[in-house]
Length: 196
Image (cartoon, rainbow, N blue to C red):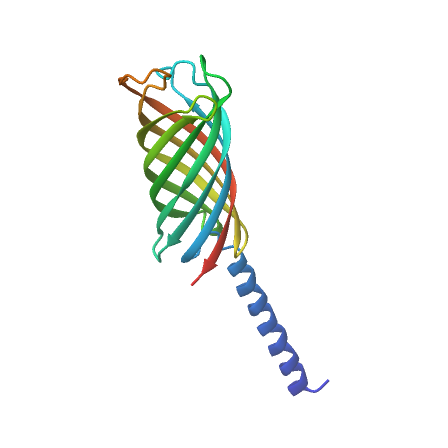
């Protein structure tokens, strides 16, 4: 092989290596700038202030936008089912929320990132069997992480803890006092990203 051919072959190999490295780095970006969609399974429990309201499972769907620099804004809906004393069947916990979040890269890796977030949400607890429904609000924060499987797909795990203010769920039509307590949830899901 001539020196010219050898150099050409070496150059092509070097470019292929650089291209594959760049592609691999792109696939490891778990929170790229742009829009994203998330789906999660949720386990949620309440403090003892909400007597008779048992832990339950549900799901969460969200849409988010990430800016360069790591700031992220997320909004979505949460729904979970819970057993409650003195009422037939399950009650549904519905929440509409907004989360300002910040994404922090760890270990100089784009594949693993840490999430720190706040949350403001409107909640509604309802029982379809007894036509009883009450509203409330939650304010809290969450921590979690993302693990990038590829550039457009990542696994997300978060832990949420917040205060919960809600009217007392009862069958009587008379006004009921507001209960103040807390709510805790653990979420595991996936995020699809649409990078800019």
